[in-house]
Image 1: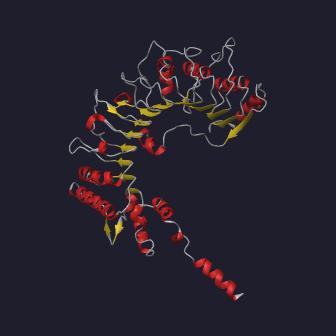
Image 2 (image 1 turned 60 degrees about the vertical axis):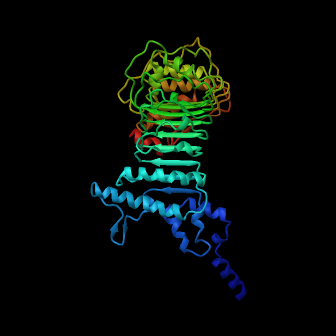
Image 3 (image 1 turned 135 degrees about the vertical axis):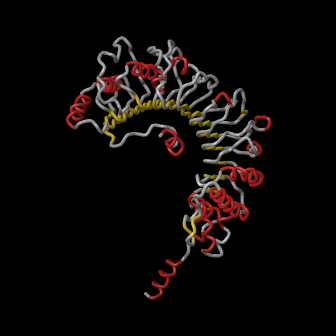
Length: 452
């Protein structure tokens, strides 16, 4: 019994984490704030140099103790205080970089607002040669004012992923090429490119959020497959030309377009996306597509489209309803349909006799999943549910999230009505969702602050 207790005690005291392979230790350290990762050096001799080999470095507020020995890291004195703060910030980064012994595959820096960005700007130039030697692949710079003074040689790095947030996008690189870049994210970046063209031969994913003067046409990217874009307004330069090979496209328009058009925007825009597989229209973009009217079907079907997401759908607008029907009918292989209704329509009256033309025969043989969020029980919404149930022989689930403003008695009556709707699929089930489904393809970290 005593030996058993001794063995049990020894088992408890065994340091399993320290016995892990070095690569697993590095993975664990990558999930810690850099400050805590460095502090593991005092745990034991086995951990003393482990942090110097982690391949991903992230520097932001989490690396600092705001109060240390009764002295704050950051001073709020202007402008000298901001300069001192910036020097402390880059000094801490330099200490880590000097002691780092392994490759740096990802470097991320979020400059605190209390720091002078011109100082951090100068240090970035000094770090780029080090990044090149360390084999960096991903670079993330946030809240750093990159100016044309002291140009950054990003093109000298073999980057596969570049994210710049709240910056001036750099000058045209040498020879105008980013030869290895596969993923480029520009958020709140500005620069007047004019006719400048960036050659990105292997670029697959491009994100443009709130970028004034920057368009996908500024990038020569024959392999571009995914484009995520958020704009405040539609400009005369807006077009889908050059996106013929795109398979995923998400666009959010934050303000209602003012200009009216006599030609159909949905025809003009979608006609240039013949290979699109996943399409998402958010906020006011569906209003833009609906302008100019919509035919029953597009001239050329969207044969590859499998997932369609429409955010902020106004079921009191006959033009938007016609546009939605046009998109659904034009996608014979559609598998998933996600709709988020506009929840700010209180007081607007229901439309009557604006929904389905009985002479228009439609069948959605591949549609399996439908989700409704912020469902308000309007006539047009119920008619869409009825229409999809009757013409979707492969439908498996139709999930509905009721708007918070819907009364219980109205919800019960609506549920009874839907249960009586005829169904072409014997497997079709109507499910209630407690929470709305998030159908945007954008990382909330990237776009929420910009939108709000």
